[in-house]
Length: 103
Image 1 (spheres, rainbow, N blue to C red):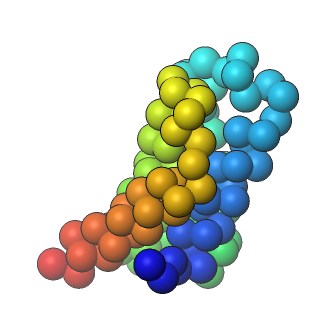
Image 2 (cartoon, rainbow, N blue to C red):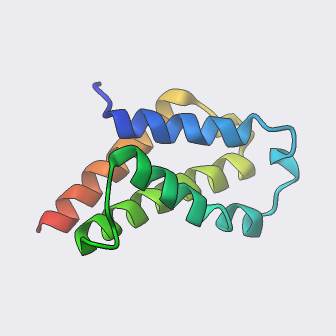
């Protein structure tokens, strides 16, 4: 399967968070609080201007939710920390976001 640069970026972001020694001590509330930072990183990486385009805000927000969801699942289940699963999940989230926003 071919993955988008954004899916690879988001997967890398997930692993950056999960590889911190403090990850296993995080709460789900802590992970939820990462959303604004994740959103900003997605906007920066994809060169989005969400303050000017509502569609870009929706897209970045939906993808950020996907990253947060992956982090929650990986906190609950350490064996879920599989790069292929994470890449596929985030690529699917990106594809769904694009389809939903266009239609």
